[in-house]
Length: 322
Length: 259
Picture 1 (cartoon, rainbow over the protein chains, first blue to last red):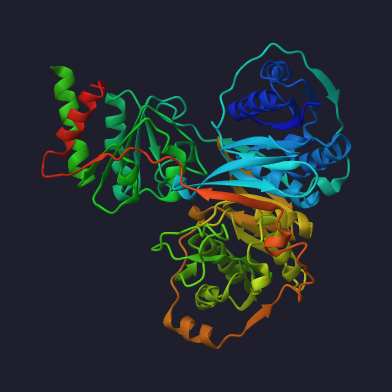
Picture 2 (tube, rainbow over the protein chains, first blue to last red):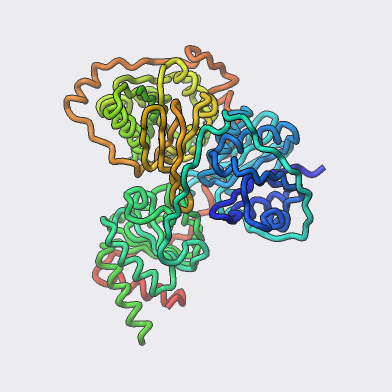
């Protein structure tokens, strides 16, 4: 019998997330893929999960899953897992995915592997590869003991592929007990992102602490614009409030694989490298010749970003005009 | 309100972290340690809340003897009490083992709020706080960019993929904070002197009722199979800017046919 692999399907901004589809595609290659979709979802969401490999979908449209964080989903997943005993339960390394996976592992006393980049099923368990310390190491881990194996998987680890598939839908009910309604979402605020999206950008121009102040990102916006690319940033810069979180590249931000990544004033902390080191070509500009980013750069320029970047912008304008 | 801050003490940021191929763990012993900057933000938030609402901030660490330096730093910043879970039997614990040890120590205290960093700056797994909240039956409020307490009600601004959420719960609760939530204070001389005299409460695994089936490398469900280096990227070209750096990049882009 094929191994049963479950995927926790996530809806963000009224869309099934791309990572959900990536996980389903991988799950359906390795075994029987099934999805759990809790809370309000857009029209066609169930069909979409089927299109990407789910042969069965456990479904509740109850708004309790949207309005109360973590606890209702954990309770519902725990009872479904106890009943159906999937071999593996996959989560995206998103905010919600991490919360639910963490609580679930404690509730069911199951181990969990985080930051997974790839995995295989082996002799009743999983073997996961984890890019560690920003990719300077690559580790492999397994989970000992019986029970469902919980994996938190990095986004863009797998390709989302459609396959012709019909899915059975089983309705599940939300837990009624108020004990699971302790964490209430009073309001959701969308912060509008300016400029092109990082996702799918061919060229990314990213800035780190070396830029010294929020206003210096303007220079990167100009460079990105003339190269037809998007602007990215490190966690330090986002934490400092210079740019919104939607621009964050790294382990806790977005994983990107553009054709060209220009890192400006970025030292190359583990956290950041994890999100961009698979870029096809990397150019780094940093004043510190010892900066780890240079180990990953195809072209590294040891110099002052405030001199090199403006000169680069001028030079590109000149050559494009010619 | 009494607040417990879970603070990890990690190899100093100046140290390149190595993984020991034999134990497959990070090399921690003999390496200079510091209070995780992410934990310093959690502590700062705890200190501000106790300064505003009264009560005491207690810092809780699980780690080797070298972690003491970070605990002293937390006390110097202003934590009233410190607890150190210190036992070689805990080496190699996985996230759930760590959460179990922290939970057992927290159960011995009276508290209104537990604050953790959303993730540590050395391993970034980010699941210990969620496991801890579940083990303690506390409302988990995660990825806070801002915390407000009004009586028994706690409200946070929670970082989300698309912006932020306003999330609320009743105390007792567990909050995780993002590192941008504040700028941690530097310890002052008076605090540093006072910290030297403060007692650090110590627990072993046995004190916490934890056996080898739950914690340490034997109790870890996650088993590291191998550590290795991924295929190296081909070495790139490094040049020093002598006034032509921007032009050199433009030449490179032309070679790549981007221009």
